[in-house]
Every structure is written in structure tokens, then in C-alpha cells.
Image (cartoon, rainbow, N blue to C red; front, side, top):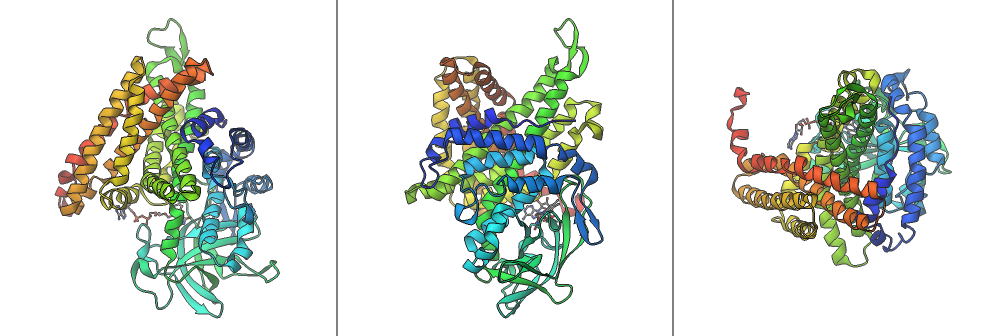
Length: 594
Ligand SMILES: Cc1cc2nc3c(=O)[nH]c(=O)nc-3n(C[C@H](O)[C@H](O)[C@H](O)COP(=O)(O)OP(=O)(O)OC[C@H]3O[C@@H](n4cnc5c(N)ncnc54)[C@H](O)[C@@H]3O)c2cc1C
């Protein structure tokens, strides 16, 4: 069974060398975010993730969360680990200090989040959803709501949930039907929500549900949805817990993966109506959810990085131990890691994981710049980058995690298919991440529609120019690795530009045709941006190598970038081909012909 060791060396490399921790540390309020603090936090978080949370991953998978007499009982050890998590102050590292958080930049918080997710995705979902509820209240809640709920959520003493989905309202939240009827200073909420992650459990005294619902006079569609806080237990004026609110867990879903995390069907208002409190203004609920979406989507993208890292570590360790045959060119029987094809699979896992991590952390740093840069022009510039790259990090990383976790099974051979080994769990757990928090199709529509067509590719073109300047730097370096990286990336950029122009032009007169290329375009952009980060990493690694610094690590970075350029980057061309030429065949068949 696999262990997890946090990849602190690579995380620090990405944070310091690629994402610009130095620059983030100059932003107002982030002055303490220095390299030494980052290293200390990552070491400590890595220990906690590896020693406390990771060993529960397989227990969570086997036991699952269970509904017993109306109560949800998490797997053995989860409640104790959660208590330690809260006591250790890991609840909300990026939340405002005023609310009991540690006020760290996203660039420092996201690697820590990656560790929780690698260690145990089911467990990590609980603080992730809590963070989402916290952010919604931080940005949009009244002072009264903040006073009651913020510090409890920031410390993790209470957990939070996001209640969006209903049976008829999944990707299309305009179809939400849950009702909210005004009554004095509060509302009575009634309706059913499905698929609510950590919607019920006994790990904390209270659960704070954030619920999308409609007021009686609300307009139809997305413009008529409001956001409410509905606590499991009502909170008395003195802060103590009062009556149980009218919200019940009706059942738990039986799932393909993430068994440790309870996915609840919640019934609001089966009796008198659950008491809820309006967040912000009426009918602006969906807009409020959208302000948090970049964080949540980046968070799920990181789940892709995290589970890929875990699957890679497990496959690598197995490949070092498992002895099978003589590898081509070897004289003796040896470990399977000697076979060229096993190495190819491991390199596919390793290089893509590194590329995804780099793009996710760079985007986290853009978020910090967008939030805190003193110059409003710079803030707007970084926000545009965040807006463009968030659906890419979410969609591309989660799709790539499917390949990486599947390769993890393949490296194990038959044992990969056997549950005891643990490789299959990563693949099953990973399957949800392309679906929740907006499916890949939804991310791609966002990328193509709002982030590309609507602004006629402005942010994308600026990004391509920046990548070109970095490619020029790589092209100046001597050696076959750098030549392959530079040539591959230059060609990929040319094709990316052509794809974007074609889709923008097509969208002007044939929207379905353009949007049939949305996912290929998203994957193309993800692969190119990953290649960009790998190229930057190779450039920096070369300079460090020339200075004789940490030779093995920096040599491996260059090899990873070269492998990515030769094995992964060419896939961008295939996606481009689908986006440029594949629309007609996508749309041609009559529905009855499927
Ligand atoms: C384990 C789990 C945990 C979850 N946790 C939560 C939670 O905590 N809170 C919560 O509110 N929800 C949660 N969800 C719900 C999740 O967010 C939805 O399942 C997801 O948004 C997709 O909605 P759907 O299942 O209704 O699929 P549908 O919307 O029916 O989609 C089906 C297919 O159609 C495609 N599709 C739909 N619309 C479009 C479109 N406009 N363009 C292109 N393709 C489209 C989709 O990409 C997908 O392939 C969870 C779900 C699961 C399974």
C-alpha cells in the first residue's frame, strides 16, 4: 500500500522560481511570505499530510461514510484527524487574519491544499467546501452573519457546504427550485438538494450550509436565485448552539470513488421550513457564487495535480520493487523500472504532473497579484490572466489526471486492477474531478465564450506573446533538449494562434460549430501552457546547473521538460486539428442516428 511523501522540493522550485514568491511577498499584507517561511510551512504540512491524513485514505475507501439512524458516521480515524487538523491551525490558511485565518497568499496556501488532496481526497473535500462557504460570507455576508459564522469557519471548528445541485438543476443552475419565504428577520427554506459533499457528519458541532434558493417573487432563470446561510443548529444570541434546524440527511449516495466523503441528499423544510439568512442582496446568489468560482475551480484543478502526484509516487515505488524479466539491453533480470516502456509511462506521469503543478501555482500567484497589487492597471491585467487560466487549470488538469491515474494502474500490471494495491482507488477517486465544480464541457464553454470570443482573444494573445519571449530565451541555450523544447513550443504557439482566430471567426456566424471545438481548444491551451512552464523550468534549471547547484534535481527538471516537449506537446496539434476541422462531423448526425 502506498505512502505519500509531499514533493516539497518541486513545490518550492515552482513557488520560488516560476510563480514568483518574491514578488508576491512585496504585496501589501503578504510581507511575511518569504522563502524560509514557505519552506517551514510546507515541511510541517507535508509531515501532517503524510503521517496523519494519508494513512486514512484506504480506510476511507473501504469503510466509506455511513448513514446510521439519521446520522452520518465518517470512516474510522477521520474525526480524530480532523480535530488535529483544526488544532494545528490548518483550517483556513489563506483566510483573513481578522477572521481567525492565517492570512497567507494563495501561492502559499495552494501547495498546502495540494498536500491534503494527495494524502486523502475524501478528507480534503471537507475543508475545501468550508473554505468556499467562508469566502462567500467574507465577500458578501452582512456584518451580523460574519460575526456569527466567520471565525468558526476560518478555524474549521464548524464546517461549510455548498448546496447548489438539485435533481433537475446540475450544470444549469437556472433550474433551481428550492424556495425561500421571508419571515421576520429570516427566511423559511424548503426543497431538496442532491450530491452535497460533507452535507452531514458528526465531526464538528455545527455545519453551515450555503444554499441557493428562490424568493416567491423572484424572476425566472439565473437572475432569480438568492444565496442563504442555513445552519444545521441555530445559533443563539450569545453564540451558543440552539435548536436543530429543519434540514435532514435523507440518504447518502453509493459512489464509484471518494467513498470516505459523504455525498448527501439533503431535505430542507420537511416540517416548518428550515431557517435561513439571506447573504447579500436578493436575486444575486449566482453572481456571488461566481465570485468564488475561480478559487473553487483552481482548487479542483489542484485535486488533479494532487491525485496525479499520489498515483505517480505509488507507480514509481512499485516499478522499483517489482522484478520482471530482462529489460532490453540488460543482462540480468531486474526491476520493471528498467523497461523502456515502463520508464515512458512513469515519465508521462511525472512530466505532466510537474507541468500541471507549475501552471496551477503560477495562476495562484496571479490571483494574489490581482487581489493585492497596488496599481489598479496591474490588478486588472492579472485578473484577466486568472479569468483565462482558471478554466484551463480546472479542465486540463482534471482530464490529464484521468490519464495519469490510469497509467498508474498500467504500471502495476495485473496488480493495478486488484483493489488491495491501491492504484485503482486513485483512478476511481479521480473520476469525479472532471465533473463537479463545472464539467469539462462547462469549463471549455467558459474559456471559449467569455474568456476568448467575447474579448476577441485579447488576453490570450498577450499570453502568447509572453510565451514567445520565453521560448526565445530557451532557443538561445545550447543542447538538443533545449532545441526540442523551443521548436516544439514555437510550432504549438503558431497553431494555437490559428485555432483561436478560427474559433473567434466561426463563433461570429455559427456558434454550435465553434463550440464543438471548445474542449479540444481547452486541452490545446492547457498542453501549451504546461509546455511553457516546463520550458521556463528548464531554462532556470540550466542556470542553476551551470552554478553547480543541486545537480540531480535540476538535471531531472531539464529531462522532464524535454520529455514533455517530445511526448506531450505534439498532442496540442491533434486537439487543434479537431478544433479547426472536426466541427462538421461532430454536428452532422441526426440524434436518431446515435
Ligand atoms: C461526488 C459528487 C459530489 C458533489 N458535490 C457537490 C456539492 O457539494 N454541492 C453541489 O451543489 N453539487 C455537488 N455535486 C454536483 C455536481 O456539481 C454536478 O454533478 C455537476 O455540476 C454536473 O451536473 P449534473 O450531474 O446534473 O450533470 P448534467 O448537467 O446533466 O451534465 C451531463 C452531461 O451534459 C453535459 N452538459 C450539460 N450542460 C452542458 C452545456 N451547457 N454545455 C456542454 N455540455 C453540457 C455535461 O458536461 C455532462 O457531460 C457533486 C456531484 C458528485 C457526483
